[in-house]
Image (cartoon, rainbow, N blue to C red):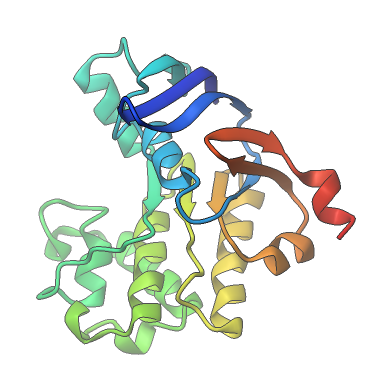
Length: 227
C-alpha cells in the first residue's frame, strides 16, 4: 500500500530531514512511528499524504507513484487518506458538527444524508464530544479540538489513516478513548500509522513499531519490548 525506496527530503543543502528512508506498509497494518521532536515524523507523514514530494527516491501510495501521477490521481489518493495533523486547524466560526461534516460534504452540513449525520453523531459520542456538537470551534479546549480532528479524519472512513501525535493533548482517559477508536478502525480494515512519543501506549498495545532518528528509519520492536 505504501512504499518508500531510498527516500530523502531536504529543505536546503544543510537541512536534510529524511535520509535514504526505506519503508513498506501493507494494507490493514497498524504501525507506530516513534521519534523525538524534530526527528522528521511530520515530514514523513506529509510525503505519505502526498502533500510534499521527496527530494530523491521513490514513493508510491496505493500503487501510484507520487512523483509521476497526475494531479487528478493525487487528489483521488488524498481523498482516500484521513490525516490527523499535530497542529490541528478547525474553522473557528463553525460548530464541532460542521467542522466534521466538512470532511464529508463541501456543500455544508445541510446537504448531508441522515446516514452520514448519524455516523458523525456516533463518532462524537465515542469521543465524548456529542454534548459539544453545537459549540463553536473557538470555544473548545486543546484536547477537544484534537478529538474533533480525530472525528473529522475518521468520518469519511478512509483507506489509510495518518495520525500525528493524536493523543498529545489528551488526559489518560481520553488518550485511550482515541486509541480505542483507531484500533477499532484498524480491525475493520483501515491501515493506520500513528506517530507518538507515548511509549506506554506502544507497550500496552503491541503493534509494528518504527523509530525515526537523525533522518534514518529503523525497527525498534525488540529494543522497545525489552525495556
